[in-house]
Length: 267
Image 1: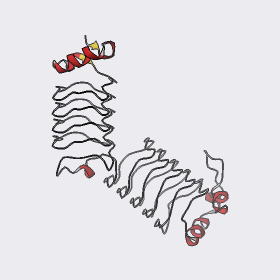
Image 2 (image 1 turned 180 degrees about the vertical axis):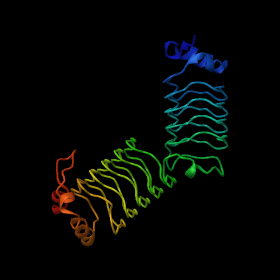
Image 3 (image 1 turned 60 degrees about the horizontal axis):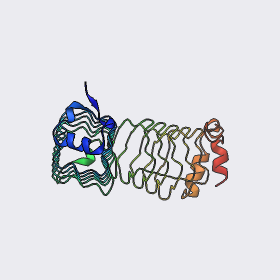
């Protein structure tokens, strides 16, 4: 039976890890923020939702470890072995992965930013991870919590973002043609220069979104979308939106309780 890691004091915790006992410990949601863990052996360890924020994990061994939901923000992972590790939905913002081995690592829905340092030559933009410049065409991100995410210049053609929380997100220059954004929460997001042809905004919360230089000749559906206080729409784009079917324009937004027509008429 595994010992519960959280029941141990910090000195005992670190001693156990450095003695190679990670596989004998219950490390679910363990808090190792800021710890010195150079070269520690975490191979095949269960580390779901572990907190490694700011930790020094250089040369650490994570081969085939289960790291789903773990937090590596600002962590030092230089030279770490992450072969075959499950990194689903891990946070890699600001992490240093210089010379790390990511062969066969599963990075779907991992979060990175412009400060993440990747191994030289690693094709992180097509790894399934989420961040600036990511190739997420057709990705299934329904109801994902992506508040404030940086997806600048990301490719999201035909992506499924229904019900996703994208409040305050940076989607500047993103390619969102034919994306499914039904009932998505985009309040305060920047879609400046984004490509939106064929996108579906049915029931979306678009309040205060920046549409400056956004490109769209047609949108699949705007029924119930709330455009209150949006910025950057040209008069032609506003007129185009108001030319949608009456039934669409007079549909209520389930969240803001305002019709699409009402929101557009205030602009």
